[in-house]
Image 1 (cartoon, one colour):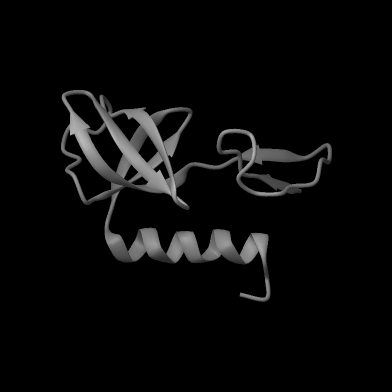
Image 2 (cartoon, rainbow, N blue to C red):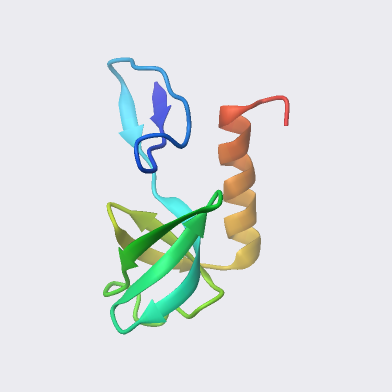
Length: 93
């Protein structure tokens, strides 16, 4: 199985196989404008839709997939998930 992490076509190296999956990524909300917001992951910023998470506030983490925030995460869970994603990229970390 392959884990494919794609952020503007360059974030994390992957290898192609027949088995692949997409992941929703924890991202921190930096700005909110009505139903859209700016989030950050690994130093990169992205505009996303917040229509599915109207309760999400600036400074909170959300799970993002395909440009939509799907769920609000507490900071500890977000950091734990981000640590696991870093391990996938570099097990030496």
